[in-house]
Image (cartoon, rainbow, N blue to C red; front, top):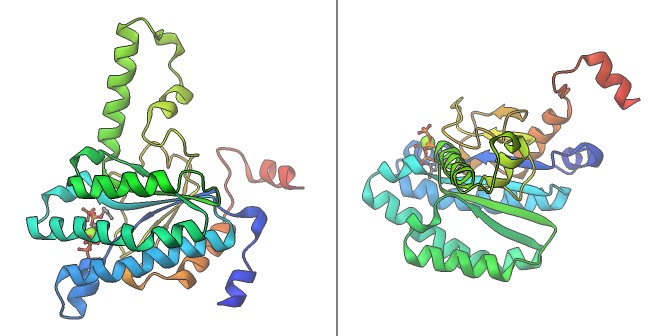
Length: 251
Ligand code: IPE
Ligand code: IPE
Ligand code: MG
């Protein structure tokens, strides 16, 4: 593990990592336990991955914790997930402070139970001046909903003559997304073997490197993260250019 970490090039770290934390239910099922047992164990992975990112110097980490579609799960599972969110925030505030981590959220938070909203607001306020790592939790998040919102906001500005259609460009769209304060995603990880995006950060991953692993989320720990980052560092990000052009740039 020490070697793994030592092999990571500090100069080529992904600035923004986004993770689709999937497979909690299957992990629990494989152990003959109820799905919620998987969610509870998934919290330990969350903790390790946040720590791992802070340790090596990643600046932005965004975790898909609850999608707009997840509201359609059985009521009891949704309720337990929300309770788990509240208890984890309470428990981890100290760790966030000690590690200089700032909490941020994306999604329609007003759909969450009041208790969760309050706890989130409290932790966001208390960590607002931290600057080692920005941890963004995607809660009640859906990328299409986010884009629909941007279109509504921009249309309103056009109708009110605050904005001319000619002025609409990628930067303006970026500035109206929930992620307006975050840079583009460099590296997106999905655990559990599923190879899909499930309505996560569709605009923001335009040029992200994608990484799919069969490891289920509760088994995904620091070592797995460091291995993933090592693979990221072996890829050539060309952004439409040729390999020769990129090599010249790196000379
Ligand atoms: C991810 O694990 C956690 C959430 C979506 C909240 P799942 O609960 O989706 O686990 P699987 O995919 O059923 O195994
Ligand atoms: C995606 O996982 C959402 C989160 C990880 C929060 P799901 O398990 O809900 O995704 P699908 O529906 O199987 O694609
Ligand atoms: Mg799943």
